[in-house]
Image (cartoon, rainbow, N blue to C red; front, side, top):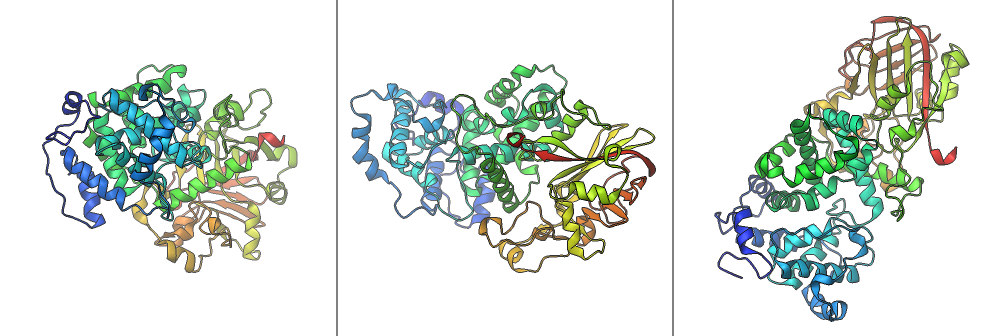
Length: 562
């Protein structure tokens, strides 16, 4: 290595232009809270040599499988695997999914070394079937390694991490796809303006969100990606979601009001990320990322598990070579204009609603369960038609032509658990909305105001008794033990008024409670009222007292079962 610590794989002239080497040379702290603070501040980002030392230490401390390939393994196998081929002509492993090696100021020798390391990783990790992020990780680590073997060892330790609940990179198509769905869910909740734009200009917004890892692992310039990686090694996978959300927020801010072509929005975002240094510094990007008050890591893991489960149920576990994301349905596909019939909403309005639902249910198509015009104005019949379906969508049209409704996460049969008394159940995925006279959605108040609660610890949420609002029993299956996502028992709420999602009795049904009711419908399905409630912190969804012209309930049908 030269005096600045650059190795033989780095183009020094490009490197000095990309990242100045002006920072401290040593790091003395060992405690995680201080490391997190220093990583976010970029303490070692200004010193190439110090960053290399920190990476070495952080990766060395990753808990790994008992048998994890090290540098000596690389030395033993590289000659056999590469043979007499020139490094630059080596094919990339299939698991990178045609992802190219980012240059990251590497010279030709460095780019060839990345190919060699990836092929050796493929030899040692036959269980890694889909990992398009790995070329970028290896290319960055090569900067901070003495040789190829050391870089190989570092990448292997990241792949072999076996700490419970800790994921560093996706290694299967199922994990990758569920991460894309989880990112889409987070965009829907935390970047609503950007999400609305994506829905408007893209025929398949899920395809846009499926690109989110590419923004980070490949399109971001080296100076930005290295800063993200600094924090990622300390804080984990959640950082990636934060940064990708921040990128989307900046993209929306820069491009809002400019014409966007549907066919080009995916490429537009890629180009924006490539040139992000023109408008957003690494510091501003991370500042924006950490200003987003995301769900806890535990809740994100539950959402990821729910998305994985939905994909498994539909048989989507490996990539279809002919068509990427071949079985996923977007709102334009899920809500068919030719066979959708509603007395309350148009196809366009139903597509707008569909764009709000969790992505694992965007795989489904709307199924009419109850219609007052077809089944009569009877709450008993409403329950009969809806029970056994989860989730459901409630639509109401008033005699004044106002339209409002609710997305309800839990089966109405849960109401029987209260012994004939009116009791609230459901989860934080419930939301209420109005469509006419103007569109407005109101989600669980905790999503917008996380300061109202502190997530409970993993241990306490499993060992303490569940509150009366619990809608699902604790499963003996460890993978389901904390499910469902956004269950109220996972949170320390100041009172139950922030978790009164849905309730049903023989004489009424209620959506949203605490200080009022978002929706109250009488037993004859004739009259209703709406007002502010603590659970959704909503404004009235229509006239405060209203007469019902029509009411519908919709379920979510797997297209493969039709």
